[in-house]
Image 1 (cartoon, rainbow, N blue to C red):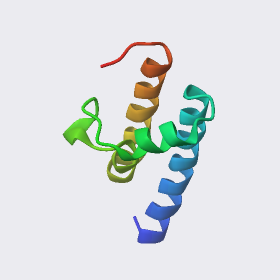
Image 2: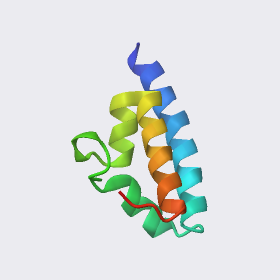
Image 3: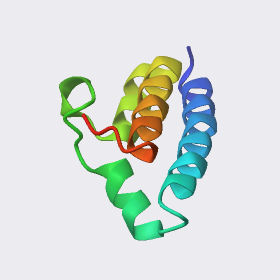
Length: 77
């Protein structure tokens, strides 16, 4: 995959992730930014959610969206 294609996919995935996180935290931008950029023990290698998406693409996005779903329903891991 070319650098440009990886960048395009990352931006597409990041938009989806950001939109879901804004829903979970009722548009609290600071909480969303903190979640997206802080290392998270629920993700492989304790990665920050955005880094998980960068490293693992679609699979990383699915992991982070699943995590957001658990948070949204009060199931923390």
